[in-house]
Image (tube, rainbow, N blue to C red; front, side, top):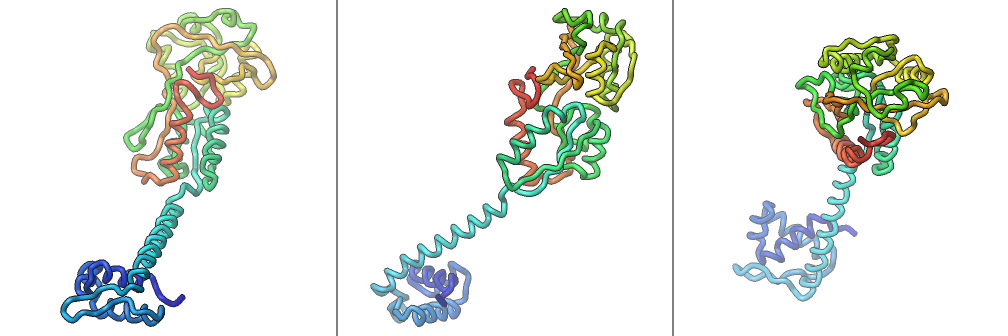
Length: 307
């Protein structure tokens, strides 16, 4: 096959307008170029496509009418090929650098990542797990594209899309006096030993809860590892404050933990998606945001009991 799509395009333009001159105006190609292309096409196909009428333009021959329809169909198919190629080019693919807060990652990250890559097989996810201060720094250095985190100490250069509110509650071991209670108060907790999550910004949040009620907590231990805190609490070293509610109530050593609600109007943590405001939204990033919004809500949170 030695004819080209350009020749077919010029042939169809001439057939639709009935004139080389009008075809030239429509497709912005010179008249000689159109005439030459049609002549070459006639030679290649060994058929006369047009009858030339002096000063009256062109009319398709019977063979020309048949080939005119076929040429239009071929051009439509070629257009479909370009559209398919364009769609493939815009397909969700590539690697997403995903940040996640230390306290959220064990529960949310596995299911969220697996469901996203299952929905978009040509996408991959590289996780970075850290505390809030470092996550925000990683966003600003473009080391992560997006972070699953809380609304803690966010500035104007970070865009935060809230997904779900998580109320604060106390966590105690199965032999703790509060384990038999369904509810408690910050005033009651303030006198008890606290195994404190001492991470940047998280510490400020928990301390502010006591401060707003004019209380000072009895911090017995300051730790930065959530799993160690859970195990110490399960072994009776004290209570801790958390917003997450894992579906498992068992610490890593197999001992049981109990959640206790806290009375009063205390600011919840808002779990959401943080991105750098100046970062251009790629198709990959847009797809992840949409996917996360479809999975995380007040009714369902991966790895957690829903609020």
